[in-house]
Length: 195
Image 1 (cartoon, rainbow, N blue to C red):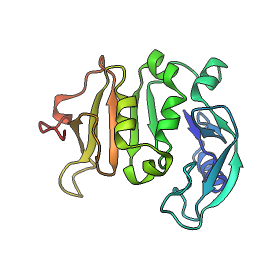
Image 2: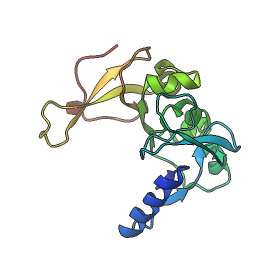
Image 3: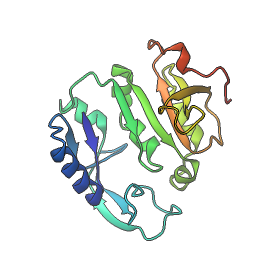
Image 4: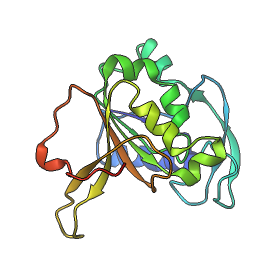
């Protein structure tokens, strides 16, 4: 398992959690995944989880720092990632398009399942939209689904996947891109489509 964490505060907490739980199989890269191998300006939030490489968001009190940036494709080419990668989770506060642009080769070769947060409010300051993320996710025939929790808070954390197509204005949510060759359990998929 690989984790990318450029926020020094979150990085320290991540390392402590890994050590406390003896998760020795987790490799941490203290960098920002992105579209280029270069240092980038990263905005640290006083609220853990809100730091971002996107400037001009609605979050107040951000402190800019310089952090190393790396393309995931670069790490894969250097042999720093064990292949094939089968699952990717992206939650980078509006920087999703840059992360996806930096891993196009890995996505094409490994065809992983990709789960990503989609938040139009955070994407727009970086010049992107929900549609930009979704189009990158389904460029190789992947099927797109919004992850929905089934009715009832105490429903055993069951989820349903609701089919979608790339479109503007998708509400803040998590989206999963499923490779065409991957079969999903039929009871996981909702019969209604969002768009």
